[in-house]
Length: 179
Image (cartoon, rainbow, N blue to C red; front, side, top):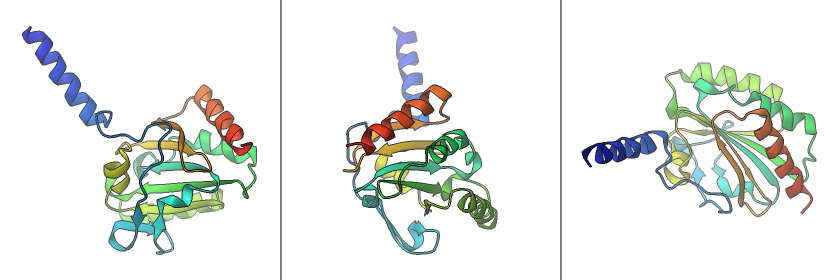
């Protein structure tokens, strides 16, 4: 009995430490609207950002710890290669600024390179881990989400996507573009 209790406590601690025990945003849900502005963050040009901007188009949404910013480059490149129509599709890269030890100037340099590589992506800073707290996104990770035109979550992967998951995600985007 004691081994079982210890095992359950260890499992609970693991779930909390990996974020799987939090109120994660689930497939089929529309997330609550969050506004990032001023000290909390916002677009990289300094203007506020509202999470309900994901509505109206199929949206790919990266939530990124700068320390693992390149983890899902293969997924980014696959989406870019598809050439999805911008009147129906958009992408966001939200940078979890509080998840890193990197100084802001280093992050800004990296962001500039990403903006040149993916000019149609909307770049946003989350200075206070609001999306970790309010949507249950993984901290210190690279998360990829896809939302349909109504803002409903249709795909989620916390961590690196493998080739099969990338193809699944591309298929889900195509399916939702046709609706």
